[in-house]
Length: 253
Length: 279
Image 1 (spheres, rainbow over the protein chains, first blue to last red):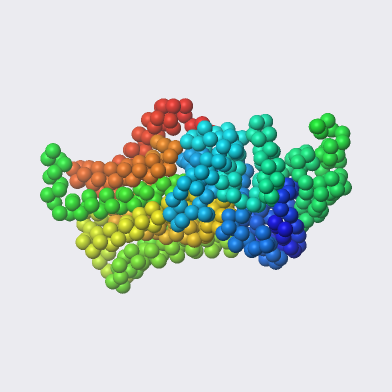
Image 2: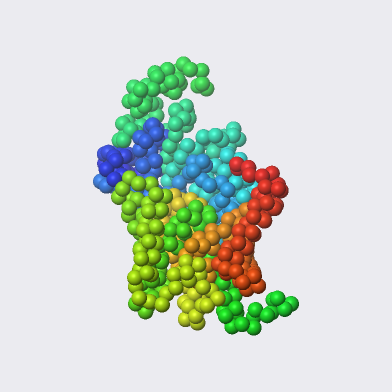
């Protein structure tokens, strides 16, 4: 198992964020993480990136503790581009190089292996020609690809993506979808936090529905039912939910 | 040439120029991180909060930097504690804690028997700096610059994307407190030149000026250090020739340089380029 989370409980000063959430993800899968705002999606991500320590339960990544997995550069987080300060004086190359920091010495001086990894990552996301541009001068989609390149350069086996397809251009969407499928082939485990139910249905092998706890988890075809979605989203209108599972609504392929 | 050389015939001017250049370089480098992290208010808080520490250290015969450091870091820890344990927002807590410490400093100055001059703490006393204080400033500046240089990439990542830093196993809590400790030390050093009230300018303005002039972090640090040292030296000279407040002159020159960048910066100046674009 790539990720084993058992009976996680998280609270922030008495505000409960997750209760008894359990989840197991194998190597080589794409899993959608679906829930309302405040349902605990970002808390789960924070547990997996070591930002929050669960008050109960445990997490194993590649059979190791989160801290050990981090030291081995196993977990990469691809942020929502909106959460990044885009006027930061830093180039695309430097951003991607930050993926290598964990494997470098204390001064973070890049060696040729690091430069090679960064170059290859930039090639894979088709940004090599923009490597010297400031990150702020890129379009939303290009920026997204830069952060994906950082995860590639890191060589992580667990990728956490926050709204990866939000506000990206068609080229980026196609490129990223292709890359994620390649990563799955290579054995990576990809967890995607998203509001885009359409995307989940088309794209994810597995799905986790959460609202303070794991409501349903399993193969997308089995779990992504109108009943389960109604459970996840509480009072959303039924036609929206039906559209999301691909029958009427006209947005399906 | 006389205007340049004459002041150098006074030992106190040579010392003042030396100290302000030192302080300028270390505060200039730090100001880049303060600007990018958005810690101006924190810098203001720390610089005020060190005051009781300075007074106590003087009256106990300890190096004033020690007292200042303890109170600087202490105030920041207290801010974090109150914020975590109450429902009050951070900027309110900062305003509350630093004024409390500052008030304590004022009372201590008036009650503790010592030969401290309040105006020297408030507005700096670089023209009357003692040899012992120069050594302290030298040590502090060297330490600050060394820490910032060794950790520069980690700190940059910490400012840019702490989540990523955490997820690759970097101890962001440690970086947070390292940066705060360095801030306390730099505030103590800056206090020598411009005093408690204006030290926040040393910790913010050069970084802000440089930020308007470049999109590269390395370049930003170089510009910030250069503009900071230039303002310090020029400020001391101007104050000598106009017989006016040294702290005021140093900070005015800094502000002037910022205004120049604000108006004329090639890309981000309001009279040039395309103005502020939301990227």
